[in-house]
Image (cartoon, rainbow, N blue to C red; front, side):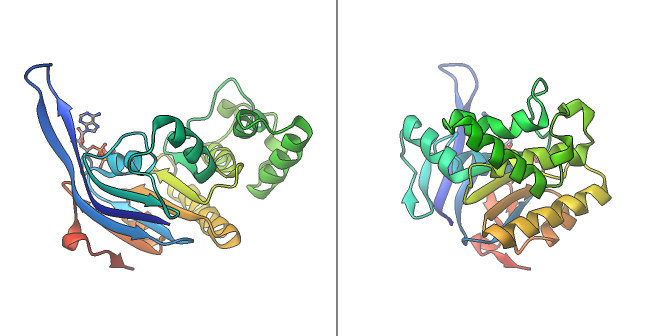
Amino acid sequence: MIQINNLSHSFKVGKKGSEREIPVLKQITLTVEKGEIASIVGRSGSGKSTLLNLISGYISPTEGQIIVNGHDVTNLSEKKWAAFRLDTFGFIFQSFQLIPSLTTFENVELPLTLKGVPKADRKTRVHKMLKRVGLDDHSTHYPNELSGGQQQRVSIARALILNPTIILADEPTGSLDSETEKEILALIKELNEEKGITFFIITHDDEVAAATDRRFHLHDGVLAEGGVYVEV
Ligand SMILES: Nc1ncnc2c1ncn2[C@@H]1O[C@H](COP(=O)(O)OP(=O)(O)OP(=O)(O)O)[C@@H](O)[C@H]1O
C-alpha cells in the first residue's frame, strides 16, 4: 500500500548563487491500496516520474509524507532506503534496462546474487520465474537477440524475482506495438491476481490506463479534481 499525504516537490535549477525553485508536484494526496493496479496519467512534464522517484526514495520530498506498506519512509536515510527498496519494490521501465552483456538467465539472476542467495537456489528460482513469463527456452539469449515484448518479459521476471509487494512501472509498454502491449498488460494482470502484487504504472496512454483498476490524473503537478482519485 502506498499512502501519500500532502506531498510537494520543487527542484532547484540554475547556477549556484542564482538558483530558482521550480515547483513540480503540488500537495499530492493519494492512496494506492494493496493488490491494486493503479495508473498515473498526465502529459509530458506533469511530474509523473518525479512522483515515482519520490515513492521509491531516489529523491526526498520538499514537503509532505510518504508511507509504504505502513512504514513512514519520508525521512529514511539513504542506506535504509537501499535495503527497503530492494525488499519492497520491483521496477519496470519503457526501455527495459536489461544489461546487454548478460543473458536472459543472468539478468533475472542478478538481484538474487546481490542479495546473497546461494547458486543452486538462484538456478531453481530463475528457471521457475522464466517459465512463468514464458521464456525458459530463451534463457541463454542476450537482450539484443530478443523481441521488445520478450525483453519486457525478462525485465518483469527480474522485477519479480525478489518477491516484491509493489511494482513501479514507468511506461512499461511505451516501446511496444499494440499487440505486444496487450500481452504485457495481460501478464501484469495475471501476476497481480496470482501474487497480490500492487502495481503503480506511469503512462500517457489512455488504453493502458483503462486496463488498470484506478487512474490518477496529474496536471502540471496537481492531482486532478483536488486530489480525489477517479474510479474507472
Ligand atoms: N532533476 C531535475 N532537476 C530539475 N528539474 C527537473 C528534474 N527532474 C525533473 N525536472 C522537471 O520536473 C518536471 C516534471 O518532470 P517529470 O520527469 O516528473 O515529468 P513526467 O510527467 O514524468 O514527464 P514525461 O512523461 O516526459 O516522462 C519537468 O518540468 C522537468 O523538467
